[in-house]
Image (cartoon, rainbow, N blue to C red; front, top):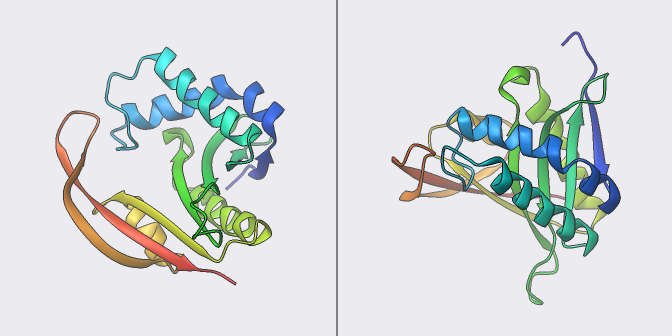
Length: 176
């Protein structure tokens, strides 16, 4: 990669300040066909609303928000660590919304974000991580290469942004 990628954990104020940039990454990913809980077309207001909720979750210490920035400070990708778990799962966290803007893909950004979110989980005292992704997609291969263990596949679990059904593969990783 010609440019450096800088991974950063956003505090509540920074999360709030970057809602618009994060909404742009989300909108680009959904426009590109990513099944990440949203349908296409994704209204800008809906994307902004989602990230506003994430920023509020950061403020409540329910999640950790990581971003990947280029040298100019533009957000190229993001991932979240959801730490708010039931009382009997204080050791667990969910990894969610791994998103990389289409213009920045195949440059190691997702891999860097995953390494950083695992480190954030360790720092938060979490030892079991769980995530899900579209079956057969690029992310599934990324997680397998990163040492995540496949739990199983649920057919027709979600919809792609165009309305077609897709399977979802669930993964876990034990970290020390």
